[in-house]
Image 1: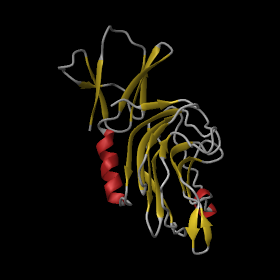
Image 2 (image 1 turned 60 degrees about the horizontal axis):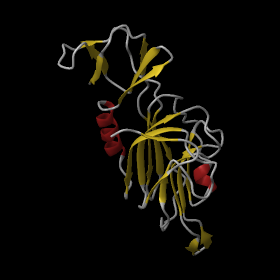
Image 3 (image 1 turned 60 degrees about the vertical axis):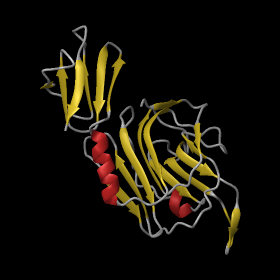
Length: 232
């Protein structure tokens, strides 16, 4: 399945409840303030303490560079800023797991350092109806918040996945994410983990690419065809 590539004027809609979101993302430059990866926006609802906002969002901080989430418009959620910055032009693994006792953001920034996690322990999320449409790469309430780049392998769960479950999904994705694009006259190959191999024919023989280390490798094509794969 190919990646969903989005420009600032389009989005894709889903309808679901959200407790965990996982995706592979590749940003193109600095995003606009509060740009969205995944968003749900319903209508205000009654709380014992007043009126609550049925809003969930996983995306970018106001700086357009680092990750942010918003739960019910609570400042304890959207002010949780750990400087988690996906690399520009690199495929990065991101995840957000919302549980009753804490919320955790996961990130492999595409810098070769692997997967990290950052819990927001003091914040206990309110129970939300999550009754509005769920959108990937956009927000129906703000036309400026559309993601510029690519989003792939989006998974939305109706429960909070554990650290072990998210790590298992992350490890499984490492062997399937390989992209090749032209950058000027060079071929840019990107992958998250493992050994990049090449061959002159699809059937092999396959050998490691000299000097190639994740997350990317660039070369000037000198042959009419070349096959690449990633070995764990």
